[in-house]
Structure formats: C-alpha cells, structure tokens
Amino acid sequence: MVGGVAVFALGGWGLYAFANRVIYGEGVDLDKAVAEAKSVGLPMTQAELESTSQISESDNAAPLIVQAVQSYEKVTGATRSGNKVRQLFLGSPAERSEATAALKAQSEALNFLRQASRKKGIAWDRDWDMGGALLFPEFAPLKDLTTMLGVSALQSAQEGDFNKAIEDLTACRRLAIMLYADNTLIGVLVGSAVDRITEDLVSRVMALALKNAGVLQRLDREVLALPMKADVENIFRYECYMVVATIRNLDAHGGLQAFTNSQFAPAPNVEKKPLMREGLPTKTLERAYLSRMLTFWTDAIRLLRAHPNDPSFVCKEMDARVRKAMEEKSISGRIVTIFTPAFMGFGDSVVRAEQFRGAYLGLCKALAYRAEHGKYPASLKEAGFTLKDPVGTDYIMKVRAGEILVYSVGPNKVDDGGLSPSDMKGPVSSYDGDVVALWPPRPPK
Image (cartoon, rainbow, N blue to C red; front, top):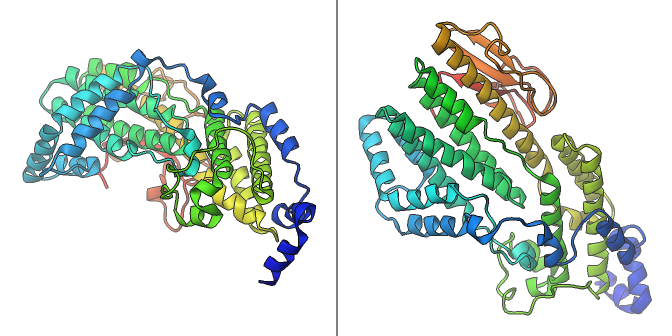
C-alpha cells in the first residue's frame, strides 16, 4: 500500500522516472528501442509482419488441413490419438484390429491430409494482433492425423504395396516440412515431432524391405532426402510481434495480472474490445514493458545473425539472459519471463530435427548397400553418404550385436557412443546424448 501511495504521489514525469528506475531498471527510451528493433527487421504492425509471406491461395494447404481437422473431430467410437493408434498397430492381433478400425474411421480426414500435402505450404488465417490470446487449435489433431497417415503407410507396406506406403510417407514428410516452416515456436516443435514419428515409421518400412534395394533407395530419395529447414529469424519476428500486440492491448487482456493468470487462454474481453493495431502504448508502465521487450528481441536477432548456423547456442544464450533478468531487483525480470518462450528446448529441437534427418538418411543408405552387396559398408562414405550434421561433425556408423546404428553427436557435440537421452542414466536434458537412427527399430513408447 505504501508503494502504491508513493507511485500515486509521483504523478506525471515522476511516475515515468519511477518506471525508468524500478520497472525497467535502466533508462526507458521507447522511441530508441523501436528504432533499434526496426533496424533489424522487427515488425510493429501486422502488415509489416506478413510482408514476407509468399504462399498463394491456390498453393495454401491450410483450408484442406482445416477440413481434415473438422472431419477428424466428428469421429466418435474410435480412438483419435495418433500415438495410441501407432502403439495398437504394433501390438497384438486384437490391438491391431482396433488400430485398423481407427484408420478406417478417419479415412475421409486422411484423404484431406493427402491432398494438403501436395500444396506448397501453410498460411494460417490468424489475427496476430490477438497476441498472447491467440490459439493454435489445428496443431494437436494435425499431429494425430499425420501419425495415423504414417501408420497407414506401414499397413500398406505389410500388405506388400510399397508404392502406396512411400506415397503416404512422402505426404507425412511434406506435412512435417510445412509445419517446420511455421512462423511460431510451437508450430516448429509440432513439425519436429511429426517428422520424428515419420522417421520411426520409415525405419519400420525399411525393416520390411531389407532385401529390396529399390524400395530402400526410394525411401532415401523420395522421403528422407526432402529438405527441412526452420527459419529461426522469421520465427523470432513473429514471437516478438505477439509480444508487441499483447502489450499494446494489455487492457483488452484485463491487465498484466489477468493476462498472466490466463495461461495464454483468451481473456473473455479480448475479442469484445477494439484492438489497437498500430502505434505505441501511452501508459507509462506499458511503454516501459515494451521498451524492455523490444530490446530483448533486438538482441536475439543480432545474436542469431552472429551465429546463423547454431540456433541451439543462440537459444541457450537467450535462456541465460532470461534467467539473469529474473535475478534483477525490478519488475522487469518478471516482464521478461512472462513474455519470452522456453528458448533452449526450441533451439535443441531445431538442431536435433536436422540431425535425425541425416542419421536416418545414413541408415537407409547403409541398409540399401547391404541389400545390394549382402553386407554392411565398411563406412558411411562407402555407402555414398558424406553429409555432415548441422554442427559440422561427421555422422558415425556402428554395427553391433545384430543391430546397426547411425548417429550424430547431438547438440552438445559430445560423442556418447551412440546413446540417446532415453538410454542414459540419471537426469538428462534435450541437450544431452546422441541423435540415433537404429535398425531394428525398438518398440514404441
């Protein structure tokens, strides 16, 4: 209460000076922060944000994905969990029968998804000025459906129809690539998860084609070799703009406390009030919040440009800056933690996704070599695989005790002997362990 009286008594420029010292901890110059942000390409309006979009209406997969999701949600009486369907399909005959029924129930949705995969990309019709109240309802069912499409591919392979299996796995991979090119951290993480599931199902199709070099070469060429790259700088632009939009419309979110309590669910009055879509906040504290956050994201862009090929390092550094902000004796630490994502998991996910792609490419080439020559290659180079992983190290192949594995040393750049995080004992993080492609594949978890 004493603090409240003191702030009230300050008034006018006194309150602004108070915000400078206590809220931000430094001098607040919002105009300078905006100029610096614009100098690195950070947007201040939705028009500036979406100026780089290049997907035409005819090339946009989003409408077909929405149709697939709507069809998916209408299904009752069969499991809608993609992971559950995958586990059931690889289980007992009775469980497999249940999985087959679930695939049949989603046949319409899966056909929409096949059509969507033939488009060039996804452009969601989102109102980015909703800021932190913006939801992404398509992602969870899309992950489930893409997993089911991969299981359908495995079913086709078991029935001897490798053409259909490869077509559906290619569709899965193309959808993962589209998601991976999304403008948000959550979209990229979903795309990475879909791609990892696809690679696991590819490895199970490989196991059915061990003596068929032609099928293995097609899996290499038509599925695994498809390029996949996240535009991390563009993702930072979108994440920054959602912060800008949220702070600019903090009243529509019910204030800072209500926004924090909402856990990023839409506050009841966000859509009822006209949103401020341009300009800067006029309230002192909100100007201080925005100045701090624009400075944070400007630093993130500059750090990324200094280390363009190492998003894992960049995200670890930004996470460290968030932790440092939490230790400040000001409200600004709280502001930074409220308005910034979990960087480190995202950076590691980006690197691991590329490393998994390379590991499975190497594994596929090694198995194709064995199908042709009756033995494993002495090295990955002998199998025609010379790709380096995203951190610049060679992939490693090991043949042991009836299995073959190809692995990268992972984001931490330490060779753990082909141990993935799940193989390691004790507490591990997404930064630990190797990135491993293994044959024969292990039972799903």
